[in-house]
Length: 523
Ligand SMILES: *[C@@H]1O[C@H](CO)[C@@H](O)[C@H](O)[C@H]1NC(C)=O
Ligand SMILES: *[C@@H]1O[C@H](CO)[C@@H](O)[C@H](O)[C@H]1NC(C)=O
Ligand SMILES: *[C@@H]1O[C@H](CO)[C@@H](O)[C@H](O)[C@H]1NC(C)=O
Ligand SMILES: *[C@@H]1O[C@H](CO)[C@@H](O)[C@H](O)[C@H]1NC(C)=O
Ligand SMILES: [Ca+2]
Ligand SMILES: [Ca+2]
Image (cartoon, rainbow, N blue to C red; front, top):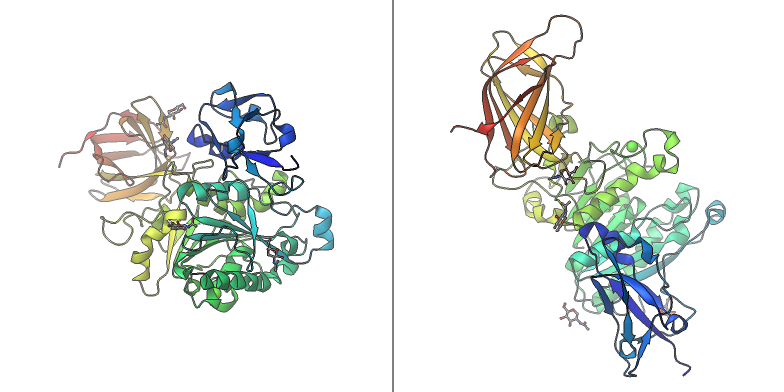
């Protein structure tokens, strides 16, 4: 039958953590389709395109995708029988799914000419992209939201490691068009300025494409651009050509070199879209230091990220880890394991010192969220003049990156003023212990004055069974001091509704950990 058939198998995530493996999806060729016992997680699903009515059944002979052995969560060997009616015709068997341009380091050395490819992903066609352009919009449904992902400089020619996960995570949260803007030919060069020089041309090609979308009935409100590094400025250039009427731009560590200090028309800025949110994760090297959006998030202060190598011995990672962290934090926001809240503040130092925790506009409004859902704060921001705000927060080293903030209010009654640091440990009812990270400046304890410390924990203990406090002045010689505590109060910032926990009348001996069971605070 000279016709070629393929089948699309997709595997649903077994556990949320295994979402990365959701991409265990593949096209199989007829030559591969015969008999095979295929290990599939229990949640495996079979999906296919429009069914040519041929009838009959076939079994798979071979797996053409990733290693099934690596599938997470209780694998089961099951025989997968697919009926031919679920098969889909493919035009050319030599052509697998279009994928992101992969170039060699050799190409980076000699440099590459610009070639922009647009790859459309939807919930229906994933994992296979469809190549589209301004004359062929393909299966892009212009009435839906369209998210463009625009990468940056590619000094080695390899595809961005985060691309697949970002695409799948976006499609997981919302039915939309995801258009990967592959300008790897152009971005691949060892000379950064050569890549940067092409950003305006990429923007023009996107403008031409969006014009066609508009001609077909799309609305600018529904257009969203996620720009990484140089891609953030490209998004800004496109937005500027539509006089800021694009729905939204997210800049993920917008490129700093060659852009620092440039006027708004030569970089991303808040007037480039109806809403512009930015994550700055490497402001001391590859990223842009100053605010560029309506809201600018500075994880861990924006300079260096926990979990990233601190020295050049970390290899290639040393150069790009901080920069890429903005993308991984954004992806985490799509994987709804925990929401990363940020705290509007003038400086990281003030945030660290607990000065910025009520989000500036009364207690009723929750703090801005990092990532995909940052636009839920849009109205609060656009009312401001100018409509710009910086927000700070800390993250854990690993996924899902959340840190849980608590306030520790201490009222002391020493006759003399004491200066020092407090370390706090919490033990949950399940026995888990979590230690605070408070590396703020020393606090000053004055008689009957309340000191409020912002404590940050890696775990969110719903029920605290035991607590410990350690007071130190930081000096190893000299007299040991005591801190006489009238009341210590612990309150969760993320869950203000949780009961506040207290302990009254406590004496802390310097450098001696003091344990106690907190009780509900009296009113
Ligand atoms: C657009 O895509 C169509 C279909 O893939 C192709 O035939 C056409 O040559 C492309 N046009 C341009 C300008 O690249
Ligand atoms: C396009 O999207 C709209 C809104 O989601 C939907 O009503 C319509 O059926 C879609 N059109 C096609 C051809 O799928
Ligand atoms: C991750 O999120 C899912 C649902 O969104 C939840 O069931 C699961 O407990 C979360 N896992 C962690 C480690 O928080
Ligand atoms: C408690 O600790 C265990 C083992 O370290 C961990 O698996 C579990 O997720 C922790 N519980 C919470 C609520 O974080
Ligand atoms: Ca601009
Ligand atoms: Ca850095």
